[in-house]
Length: 298
Ligand code: MN
Ligand code: MN
Image (cartoon, rainbow, N blue to C red; front, side, top):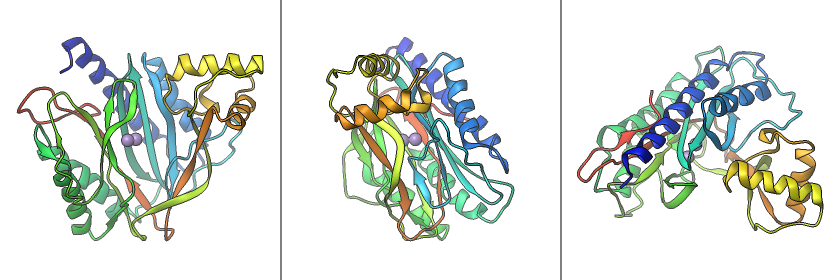
């Protein structure tokens, strides 16, 4: 069980992450630079006393996740884009992870956007101490199906621990038969994805998000200095060159990837090129017998 002081940190990280998410959604207008949106979202998180639990993901249309702008990214949002903003901060290692979807200037995919939102909100209505993972999954699947769409089967919710964004169990968005229960003291993210495509993602182009895979020192003194900054700044959570306030970050990231210290994540693309929407909350079960609290409201 978290102490009340730890609980406050978890709640603050959640609140700041949620505010950053909503700010990101408001910035999704035709012509907006993806770089500027990511910098604003991450700047908000940092300005409010949190570290970055991972880079702000801005994934458009058939890209489900793992796109974040590079330092010199010139791409801009276009009218009709369906944009997932997924962001998160930490405070003393207590993490908020949250996402929402908006459509840029049009209303062609309102139902699809509502499908992932309803699925997440349905879970929020009943999840609490003792609920098995398979019940969370089947509630998500039933809700998305009822709305006439498919879930992305291979994108799951996940447990979260202090300093560990993807810890322990995962929560598939269907009835997996897994009777593991969420219990008091646990933190976890529920993040249904809905699509009008095939219902799965595959690896697409390489992305800009990396993580320390095998942490060892390197020969190049400047790259070593960069690695020490990364350890200190991101605490072994995923990051990207753009979020590093350090000279030659992209060059050092490439070097550390060649040395096997960093691993990159590919962009995740819908298997049939369908449009993808996502909504995510972080939950915490504060006490035995309690319902889960959403830490990333509103
Ligand atoms: Mn997320
Ligand atoms: Mn997540």
